Length: 133
Image 1 (spheres, helix red, strand yellow):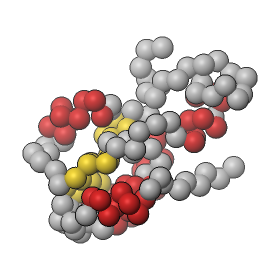
Image 2: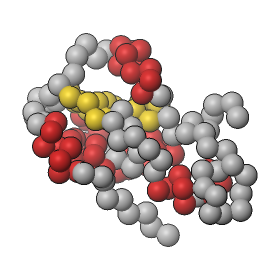
Image 3: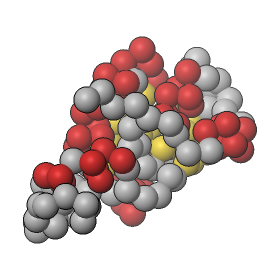
Image 4: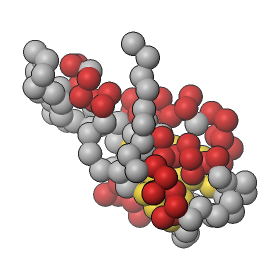
């Protein structure tokens, strides 16, 4: 089954960010990179830092953001640790941030992730599967 993704309020988010081609931006909840793709394609000399706790999201973003990887940095972590994550990446300031909070469809659809009651599987509900249960 091929995954398709329609980002929530995409046009409104991009309009609100007023992306500058030379700006520095953060997508604090990368997910399936729908918002990130729109931000990245608007950058020329700017840069986008994408954060997610879910390694599956980071891995999927490698492919989805491939055309813009020269201006995108993927960071595995929790947006609650935004300051230290950006500090380690050498970011001193940003022009805009986006946080699309919630669970993604792939997390709900994949029974092994343990997010859904709709399938007979153990509940897990960890965004970061490398974290302790």
